[in-house]
Each structure stands twice: as C-alpha cells, then as structure tokens.
Image (spheres, rainbow, N blue to C red):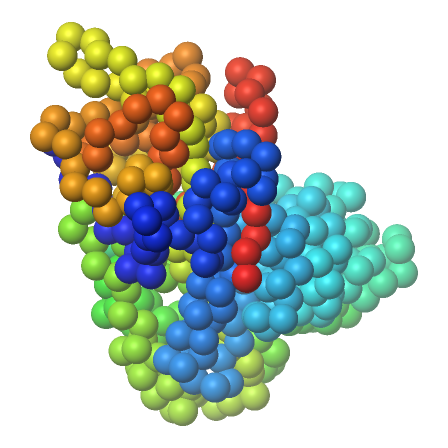
Length: 410
C-alpha cells in the first residue's frame, strides 16, 4: 500500500457523497452531462486571495499566472480578484484581453515569442518581459513598423535559484531570461531606443513549501534588482519577484505558511535601497491560488484483477491529469489525494487498488496501490488539487478521447 497526499480540509460529505461548493459530486456530473469533469470552486480561490492579502504588505501587487488554469469563466472572475495577469503566449494574451484584464496590467513572458505575438502585445499595450537581446531587437523593430511605443521589461536569469523548488527557473544556464550580468545593458539599450521600460521580472523557482527558502530568495531578488537598477541608472517602475508558493500534493507534505514570508517582505520593502524607493512590487502566483479549488471527477468503467493486483479503470486519465499521473514536473511518482466520491469518508478496504486511466499506455496511472473503500463499476473517483495544470497542461488530443468538461462554482 502506498500513501496519498492530504485531501484539503474543506471538502466534506452529505450522506456519503462528496460535496464541492455546496453541491454533491453526482449532481455536478449530472449538470455537466458526463464525466470526466473538472469542478472549480471560486469561493476557495477567493479565500486564497484573502489569505494572501492578509499576510502580505498592502502595497504588494498580486498577479495571476494564467498558465495554471486558463478556463474562461475562471479568468473572468479572477479579473476582480487580482491586480494583473501574467501570460506566456499569444493565445493567453487573447484569453486575458477577452476576460477583461487591462492591457497595462498584463505582462507577457516566455522564450521564443513569434513576430505576430510581439506585434499583438505591443499593439494592445501589454508589457513584454524580454527573454534575450534578440527579442529586444525584434520588439523594437515591430514597434517601429506599427508606430507604437513598446512597454518592455527585462526578465532576468538570476545567479541564484530557489532552493528546494519543484522547478528551478534561475541559476546556471537557462532558456529563460537574460543572464544577470547582461540584463542591465539590455535595459539601458531599450531605454535609449525610446521604449517604455517597465522594470524587472526575476523568477527563481516554483512549487516550494519552505518559507525560509522563499524569504531568502526574495531578499536576494530585491538586492539583485537594486544592483541592476543602479547599473541602468533608472528607477524600475515594477519589480516582479516571481512566485514559488507551493501546494501540499504528496504524502508527508505540509502546507506552506505564508505569514513569515509576509512579515519578512514587509520589512524588506520598508528598508529598500534608494534606487527602488519609487518602484512597485508584485508576486505572480498560479497553482497556489487555484490548485486546491479543483476536483477531477472520473467514472469507474471496470474493476479487474491481474496476477493478484486489482485495477480500477476509469474513463479519465493522464490526457486530462498528466500531473497526477506523475508525468509532469516530478521525478519520483507519488500519489495525489483521491477518494471514491460516492462513498466519501467510508473506511478503506483491506487490499489496495491501482487506479488507471483509459489510455493504451502503462504510464496512465492515477493512483498506485492506494487505500480506497470497495470500488465497483459506475462509482465516481475524485482526484483533488486538480485546479492547476490539469486540462490545459495535459495531452488532451492523445488517442482521440473527448476533452474533459469543466464547471465553475461560486
């Protein structure tokens, strides 16, 4: 038997049925029309935003990295919850604008931006986080051709990383950003060329559960932004400190306590170097805001035994939940929290089961030797922490299965 991660505490049951946002899981499936189904509870997202606001300095801006979950109804609601969107493609640019986010509160990062993407962003008035000197030259050429002054920031590849992060975005050779020792020269060149310089984007890592590591990285980020700004000789309008706030997905994980991060950051912003006194600061978060708000519901199609091991076969799989299958951002596969939604809270059976998807590949495994109540055909399996990097980060076209349904509650 292998343990599962912790189920978020706010999910309960009525008469044995998992309740999400005040509604029973089975009734939500009926409303959506079928499984597989992602359900997102906006009340949980709003509570996360409130928790952030209460813990962090009042002046700190909160940006939503829409790559975590770009579901259109959710984006429209996020416009009223956060101070800006961070995007990473021309498609996400269109989503952000369609949701109603102001262009001047939207920033566009990511290596390899095409010419049409640069043109769309510059025309709309979105800030482009430059990933290289070449991208800076291309942005200036596009801006000159269409007669628009571009809003440009510089994404910095810092000379440090976020220790213990799930994905290290800084330190060493990286495809992201401009190396710290060249970033000031690029910013100065953009200013001299007439661009509307918007500051720095410094992202060192993601999915971290250690508040001390995040505090240390934020302090290093502020110090780096000050050194670079001194070298440029200009006050950066905005310093984006990146994100890094993680979620407790796996056995043994404890939720991140953000209160000490807020205390340390409040002190750091009170004692800023002179060159940053006029700067605004932002943190961009994705999974931490929306991950725990999502539940993936998938129906049991078959229960079979092979050489003494019981397999629960469901109509979903890694084509919707690549992360839960262990094939997105993890080295060692561990179990996400899951439950039988229509027997929520019932004690587990003695023998474990392995929950697999409907795809013809052995890596389509959603739960490995997990303890669940007795399972039968027609039951609903719920996978938690499904609000981030689910449908949008999974190979939904693989083997031609239907795309998952999605519902927003609250």
